[in-house]
Image 1 (tube, rainbow, N blue to C red):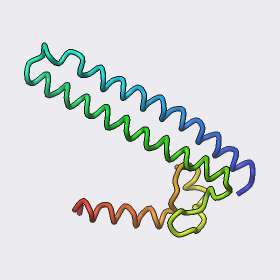
Image 2 (cartoon, helix red, strand yellow):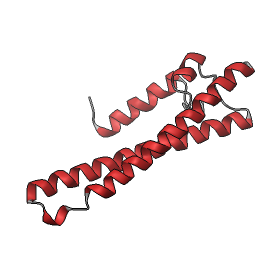
Image 3 (cartoon, rainbow, N blue to C red):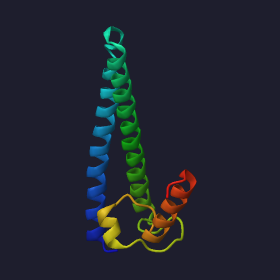
Length: 124
């Protein structure tokens, strides 16, 4: 991979990290605020508030996981292993890296991982 492409991907990763971090913080704050007036609400309002709070916290966790994946990709850039599948060691296609620069699996290994995950969850 040439240095221009690598720098372009680094820039995308840095932008993504900033965006995911902002979203994680915002969702966590929304989750904390959603529970602030539960005592005065009726049971339906409390159920909706609880659902909203849990949804916001879950989304915050997802964003935090994405930040960790971006940090991992930046680390692999620094150590020279960026663009190699962590499962099989083959090169990850440039189009895949451009679409999902924090990916750590080639498309074949990602597909296999998703199939295993679906089997584990019993999804048909």
